[in-house]
Length: 640
Image (spheres, rainbow, N blue to C red):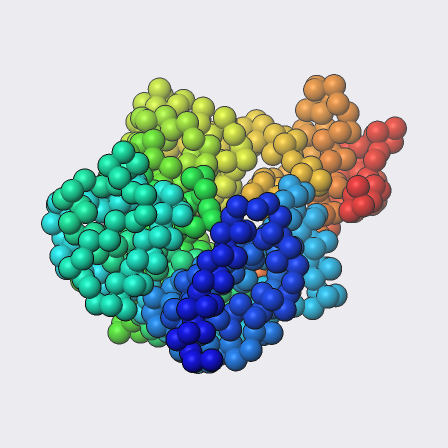
C-alpha cells in the first residue's frame, strides 16, 4: 500500500479510536493494558500526517496506565526522536513528562520520611526504576538535550511587542484554559505549517463570540497568535522535562550540557517578552492538568530556577559580566577571599544584556501584588542562589538591591497571611542574614519600633514549622557574633532587638520545647524535618558552652509543668534515633547540614550520640532525665 494512503487510513483509525476513548468509559484503560499496542503507537509517530493524533492518544493512554512504559522497548527510539522537527519534539515532551517522572501512588504516607526511606531501600534492591531507565534512554540520543535547550530559548516573533498584540495574547490565555480547544489549535497550526497558508484565518471548530473566542481584532491575526501560544507550550513542556533530567541519576551530565548550550542566558533574553508578562491574571493550563497546577510559564520557570543546586553547578551563570565584577569588588572591599566559583566561572556562558536573570527576578518580585501566589516561587528561586555555603559577597549583592527591606515589608507591614509565602520569606531572610553583620544592622534600622518587632515575632511564632530556619540562622549568627572581637559586631549585639531576644535562655527553651513537640517520627516529612535539625543546633551550641545538661533539665521541668512527664524527651529520643538512620548514610544530606550551619558533621553525630547515650549516669544523656515509670525509648518506629 502506498504511504499516503496508509497514512490517511491510519489517521482515520486513530481519530475513531480517540473518539471512542473519549465517549466510551473504560476503553482507554483496556488499551493501556496492551503494552505491545502502546509500543506500536510510537511507530506511527514517524509520519507527520498521523503524529499529532498518535501523540494525543498515547498521552491519554499513559495517563491511566498503571505500569510505566519503558522507552528502551520502543523500536529505533533514537532514530525516531532525532527525526522529529522542533514542533514534533515539543509535543513529544508532553509524553516524556509522563514517562520520566516517578509514578505517584496517591498515598499521603509517601510524603513521610519513613515511607520514603522504605521506598528507597526497596528501589535499591530492585534496581533502576522505569523512569530512571527512560531518562537514560533519552540522554543516550545524540543531541537530545541540545535540541531541548534550543527549543526552550528560541526567540519569539518581534511583532509581539505591541500593546494590542499583548492584549490579544492575554485573551488567548483566557480562552485556552480548555485543553481540547488547545489540541484543536495545535492541529490547525500543524496544517498551517504544512500548507504555508499564513494569511488564512483558522477559527477552531465550534468557536464563537459566546464561548469565549477572542474579539475580531484577535481573530484576524489568529495564525500569529497561534504561533506564540505554541512557543509558550514548547517552553513549558521542555522546561519540565529538563527539570526532571536535572534531578535524575545523570544530573551531572545534564548540568554540563545546559551550561554549554547556554540555556540560562537564553531564558534571560526571553524573560520580559514571554516568561514574565506584565499582565498575568489568567494562567495557561497544560493538557491533562487542572487549574490548581503550577503550570503557567511563571511558576514553571521559577520552579526550574529554584532547583539549585541541581539546576546549576555554577549558580553564577544567573549573572552577567558586570554583576560578576560587582561580586569581586564586594569581596575586595571587605578584604575577604573571592569565591572560587566566581573566579572559575566561564564568562562566555553567563547572561548578556544589562541585567542577569537573578536581577530580573528581583525586579518582578518587588512589583508582584501582595496577594500573588507567585511570591512563594519567587522567594524560593532567589533563596536557591544563597543556599549552601554562606557567601558574604552573594548576600551583599542582594542587600544592595533592597531585598531585605522588601521581605520585611511583606512580613511586617503587609502582614502576609499565606503560610507557604511566609515560609519562603523566612527561609530567604535567614539565608540573607546568616553571619552577616550588615544585614542585622539593616534589619534593626527597618524594625525600629517595639510595635513592628512585636508584629515580626507574632509572624514567627504563628508557625514554627514555617519560621524555624530563620530561628536557626539567627541562633547560629548570635553564637558567631558573641565570639568575635569587633566594634561593628559589638554595636549590632547591643542594638539589635532580634539578637537580644534570641540570646535569652527562656526564649531558646521555648523554641526548643515547641520544635520537639510539633514533630514525631511517624509524621516527619522533608518539610518539617528542619524542626528537628534546628532543635539540634540549639543543643549543639549549648554543648559548646558546656550548658547541655542545663538545657535538658529545663526541658524536663517544662514537661512536668505541662503535666506530661517523659512525653517530650521520649519523643525526642525516638526522633534522634531516626535522625541517625536517616542522615548517617546520606552524603548529600550531611553535606547540606554542614554547609548551612558551619558546624562539622562529626560534631552533629557526636552530639546525637551523647544525647542517645544509654548510661543514666551521664548528665548529657536524655535517659537521665526520663523517670523510669515513663521510659518508652525502645519502640521499633519503622514498623508502626
